[in-house]
Image 1 (cartoon, rainbow, N blue to C red):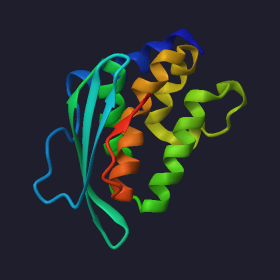
Image 2: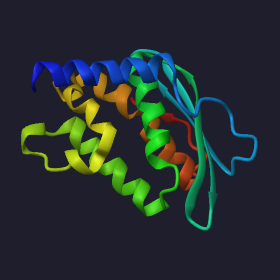
Image 3: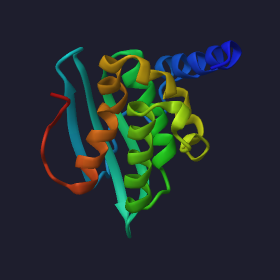
Image 4: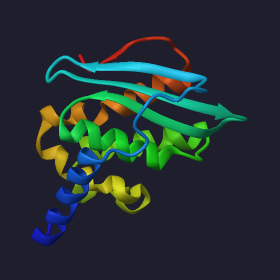
Length: 151
């Protein structure tokens, strides 16, 4: 990755960590779940209001490392207005970005800003930080009632 681009990516992650978007409990949420990463102590709760199969509102609350918080913030921006099917497809693309050789992945452009996490694949322990909110939103949208853990 080009050095300037990497700096830009790092700045976007730091910005979303310092000023997370869509942070806080949704009073009218009809889907919610809690997630926990025991490896580093990240905790996240995800709240969504789904109407007619579309995510109308989505937010998160919790505490965690910069990667975890930025991922949750960018996730909420990416999923608002998406159908449940689109949300699941985006999760799979994002997960592939983090766990595959990014040079061979053609998913980058369709991920938009989420591509900033492409470097996480070089740090396997951080993949759980970046995907915690995503696994949690899947549980929320499935209304499984399960507490999500990365272990």
